Length: 174
Image (tube, rainbow, N blue to C red; front, top):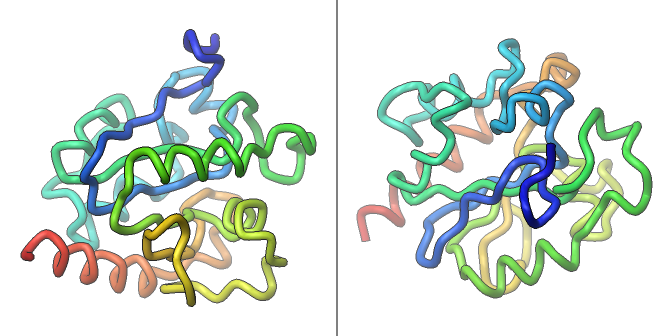
Protein backbone atom coordinates (compact mmCIF):
# COMPACT_ATOMS: atom_id res chain seq x y z
CA UNK A 1 0.00 0.00 0.00
CA UNK A 2 1.52 3.35 -1.02
CA UNK A 3 2.19 6.07 1.53
CA UNK A 4 0.26 9.34 1.41
CA UNK A 5 2.50 10.74 -1.32
CA UNK A 6 2.13 7.56 -3.35
CA UNK A 7 5.54 6.16 -2.44
CA UNK A 8 5.77 2.44 -1.76
CA UNK A 9 8.60 3.07 0.72
CA UNK A 10 9.05 6.59 2.17
CA UNK A 11 12.14 8.67 1.52
CA UNK A 12 14.66 8.94 4.32
CA UNK A 13 16.02 12.40 3.58
CA UNK A 14 17.02 15.43 5.59
CA UNK A 15 19.35 18.36 5.02
CA UNK A 16 23.07 18.00 5.66
CA UNK A 17 23.52 14.30 4.85
CA UNK A 18 26.94 13.03 3.87
CA UNK A 19 25.43 10.37 1.59
CA UNK A 20 22.16 9.56 -0.13
CA UNK A 21 21.88 6.03 -1.52
CA UNK A 22 19.58 5.91 -4.54
CA UNK A 23 17.94 2.66 -5.56
CA UNK A 24 15.96 1.99 -8.70
CA UNK A 25 12.60 0.85 -7.30
CA UNK A 26 11.55 -1.28 -4.35
CA UNK A 27 11.46 -5.00 -5.03
CA UNK A 28 8.08 -6.71 -4.66
CA UNK A 29 9.25 -7.97 -1.23
CA UNK A 30 10.35 -4.48 -0.13
CA UNK A 31 7.09 -2.94 -1.32
CA UNK A 32 5.07 -5.57 0.56
CA UNK A 33 7.11 -5.06 3.74
CA UNK A 34 7.35 -1.28 3.20
CA UNK A 35 11.06 -1.41 3.98
CA UNK A 36 14.17 -0.78 1.91
CA UNK A 37 16.08 -3.82 0.66
CA UNK A 38 13.82 -6.28 2.52
CA UNK A 39 14.60 -9.36 0.41
CA UNK A 40 16.54 -11.59 2.83
CA UNK A 41 19.08 -12.51 0.12
CA UNK A 42 19.78 -8.88 -0.81
CA UNK A 43 23.27 -7.93 0.41
CA UNK A 44 22.51 -4.23 1.00
CA UNK A 45 22.33 -4.11 4.81
CA UNK A 46 25.20 -6.56 5.24
CA UNK A 47 27.31 -4.51 2.80
CA UNK A 48 26.66 -1.22 4.62
CA UNK A 49 27.94 -2.79 7.81
CA UNK A 50 30.84 -4.68 6.21
CA UNK A 51 32.28 -1.51 4.65
CA UNK A 52 31.74 0.53 7.81
CA UNK A 53 28.91 2.83 6.72
CA UNK A 54 26.88 1.57 9.71
CA UNK A 55 28.33 0.33 13.03
CA UNK A 56 26.14 -2.77 12.97
CA UNK A 57 24.01 -4.59 10.43
CA UNK A 58 20.58 -3.00 10.41
CA UNK A 59 17.47 -5.03 9.66
CA UNK A 60 15.35 -3.77 6.76
CA UNK A 61 12.60 -2.51 9.09
CA UNK A 62 15.22 -0.38 10.89
CA UNK A 63 15.85 1.66 7.73
CA UNK A 64 14.91 5.01 9.38
CA UNK A 65 18.04 4.65 11.55
CA UNK A 66 20.30 5.35 8.56
CA UNK A 67 19.70 9.05 9.19
CA UNK A 68 21.63 8.62 12.47
CA UNK A 69 24.71 7.83 10.32
CA UNK A 70 24.25 10.80 7.94
CA UNK A 71 22.88 8.47 5.24
CA UNK A 72 19.65 8.97 3.32
CA UNK A 73 17.62 6.60 1.15
CA UNK A 74 15.44 7.12 -1.89
CA UNK A 75 14.71 5.58 -5.31
CA UNK A 76 14.44 6.83 -8.88
CA UNK A 77 11.09 5.00 -9.25
CA UNK A 78 9.17 5.55 -5.99
CA UNK A 79 5.67 4.51 -7.09
CA UNK A 80 6.41 1.17 -8.78
CA UNK A 81 7.98 -2.07 -7.63
CA UNK A 82 9.70 -4.98 -9.27
CA UNK A 83 12.81 -5.75 -11.25
CA UNK A 84 14.27 -2.92 -13.32
CA UNK A 85 13.56 -4.54 -16.68
CA UNK A 86 9.84 -4.90 -15.84
CA UNK A 87 9.28 -1.27 -14.83
CA UNK A 88 7.20 0.82 -17.24
CA UNK A 89 8.77 3.92 -18.74
CA UNK A 90 6.66 6.24 -16.62
CA UNK A 91 8.03 4.63 -13.44
CA UNK A 92 11.29 6.53 -13.77
CA UNK A 93 11.16 9.99 -12.20
CA UNK A 94 14.65 11.50 -12.55
CA UNK A 95 13.32 15.09 -12.38
CA UNK A 96 11.68 14.34 -9.03
CA UNK A 97 14.96 12.86 -7.80
CA UNK A 98 16.94 15.91 -8.96
CA UNK A 99 14.53 18.17 -7.07
CA UNK A 100 15.15 16.15 -3.89
CA UNK A 101 18.91 16.49 -4.34
CA UNK A 102 18.53 20.27 -4.83
CA UNK A 103 16.33 20.49 -1.72
CA UNK A 104 18.38 18.33 0.66
CA UNK A 105 21.90 19.07 -0.72
CA UNK A 106 23.73 15.86 0.24
CA UNK A 107 27.49 15.82 -0.20
CA UNK A 108 27.41 12.50 -2.11
CA UNK A 109 24.75 10.65 -4.06
CA UNK A 110 25.40 7.00 -4.84
CA UNK A 111 23.27 4.91 -7.16
CA UNK A 112 22.94 1.33 -5.97
CA UNK A 113 22.61 0.10 -9.55
CA UNK A 114 23.70 1.13 -13.00
CA UNK A 115 20.09 1.23 -14.24
CA UNK A 116 19.03 3.89 -11.75
CA UNK A 117 22.13 5.92 -12.60
CA UNK A 118 21.48 5.49 -16.33
CA UNK A 119 17.89 6.71 -16.05
CA UNK A 120 18.98 9.76 -14.06
CA UNK A 121 22.23 10.69 -15.78
CA UNK A 122 21.08 9.90 -19.32
CA UNK A 123 24.03 7.62 -20.05
CA UNK A 124 23.91 3.97 -21.16
CA UNK A 125 24.77 1.51 -18.39
CA UNK A 126 27.81 0.36 -20.38
CA UNK A 127 29.27 3.88 -20.18
CA UNK A 128 28.98 4.02 -16.38
CA UNK A 129 31.96 2.57 -14.55
CA UNK A 130 31.59 1.66 -10.89
CA UNK A 131 32.91 4.19 -8.42
CA UNK A 132 33.22 7.98 -8.46
CA UNK A 133 31.88 9.57 -11.63
CA UNK A 134 33.16 12.69 -13.37
CA UNK A 135 31.08 15.77 -12.68
CA UNK A 136 28.46 16.38 -10.02
CA UNK A 137 24.70 16.13 -9.73
CA UNK A 138 23.14 19.29 -8.30
CA UNK A 139 26.45 19.92 -6.54
CA UNK A 140 26.83 16.43 -5.05
CA UNK A 141 29.58 13.93 -5.88
CA UNK A 142 28.15 11.06 -7.91
CA UNK A 143 29.01 7.40 -7.38
CA UNK A 144 27.72 4.28 -9.12
CA UNK A 145 27.79 1.06 -7.12
CA UNK A 146 27.26 -2.60 -7.98
CA UNK A 147 23.77 -3.74 -7.12
CA UNK A 148 23.32 -5.78 -3.95
CA UNK A 149 20.23 -7.43 -5.45
CA UNK A 150 20.23 -11.20 -5.83
CA UNK A 151 19.64 -10.64 -9.57
CA UNK A 152 22.97 -8.80 -9.78
CA UNK A 153 24.95 -11.36 -7.77
CA UNK A 154 27.32 -12.16 -10.66
CA UNK A 155 28.27 -8.48 -11.00
CA UNK A 156 28.64 -7.62 -7.32
CA UNK A 157 32.00 -6.26 -6.17
CA UNK A 158 32.74 -4.95 -2.70
CA UNK A 159 35.56 -2.63 -3.86
CA UNK A 160 33.41 0.32 -5.03
CA UNK A 161 31.40 0.12 -1.81
CA UNK A 162 34.64 0.19 0.22
CA UNK A 163 35.90 3.22 -1.73
CA UNK A 164 32.62 5.02 -1.11
CA UNK A 165 32.79 4.23 2.62
CA UNK A 166 36.33 5.63 2.77
CA UNK A 167 35.14 8.84 1.11
CA UNK A 168 32.18 9.14 3.50
CA UNK A 169 34.60 8.63 6.41
CA UNK A 170 36.64 11.58 5.12
CA UNK A 171 33.55 13.76 5.04
CA UNK A 172 32.40 12.65 8.50
CA UNK A 173 35.87 13.54 9.88
CA UNK A 174 35.82 17.09 8.48
